[in-house]
Length: 207
Picture 1: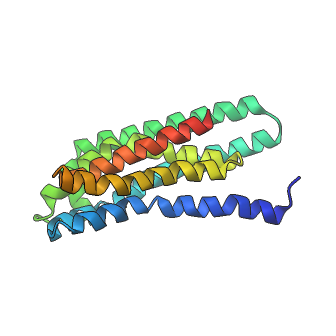
Picture 2: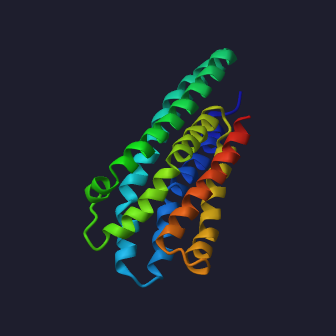
């Protein structure tokens, strides 16, 4: 019953912010790692960007597919089918993330080289990618939950869950990289911890 123009703005603005925020993790890591004054470490974070894009693509794949179905079922007052699809989309997304983790860790060095790593970058890139891959299941699942919330009309809550993780990442990066002396591994740990926090908020929102 809401005017279409107002509804589009209400749903699109949080959606745009959510999609922008998903790129902030790698940008924040790159910025703080660059302060270490080691170009190889900075390059290692840079080559991982395509992998992050693949992880995000898996999350969006299951999120958009299940979200569209959920939206139609809710519109038709078929809540049971909508709930089943929400669970199916979430679990398949999490399983897809687990598969990425398994394959990535099994073929870690070929994967890092495929991403564009050179010999000097390789040790740092492997350290960074190894930790990022461990967080892939809840990264994909959180993006799916974000999309599902959006298709239920709760785009603002989806935005809050994604944004909270990005803000936490900006705070954890300098703490783990410099204060704890973890270097590039600290940047990766900050990313997956922040993503997990966002995942928990989104899961809470869906409940």
